[in-house]
Image (tube, rainbow, N blue to C red; front, side):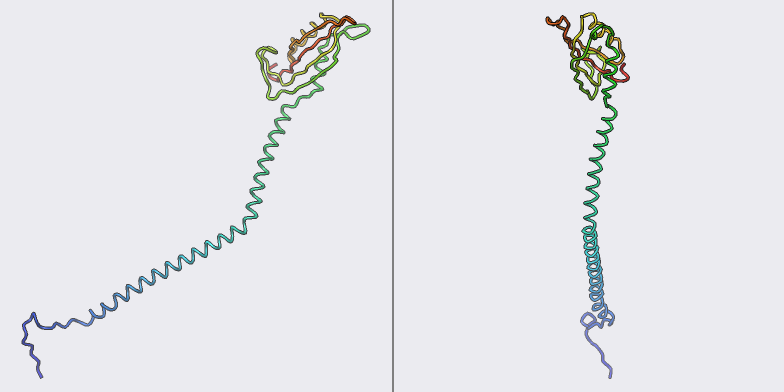
Length: 202
């Protein structure tokens, strides 16, 4: 039997090929598959990152005692470095008092028959760090120590000789305080401050 369609072309039913239907079904499925793969990849990546984060946190928790110990050691090292610096500074600026006193005695005038021409009744010593210079004392030279001396002297000439010897010395400077004659035995009570000059400034 022969079927003849007598309708105009614009009213006739057009049969579309079957692959369009296939595409209409397959394309959304393909999009869903791609979106699903991307979602799965994103979820897997997030899960991996979460596991890695937890692993790092576990490692950090295990390392905390060692990190605390390291911080303590660093703190102790800094304290020790400070103590070492102080010790070195002290060693570099140590005053050898026996040498200072011996040098002071070497400048004493000699003389006197039954008693020494000059003596020390008291001697006090003070270290000066850092070295200090005073334009009004010791000719402006820096000193590392001061020795305060009091005693008796038979007359002012002997005291003046002692002061001149200290002034001529490269190791000492002197600041005269006072001298007063005692009415009881006729000797003079004197007081001096002697500065030990810093090495290199002598």
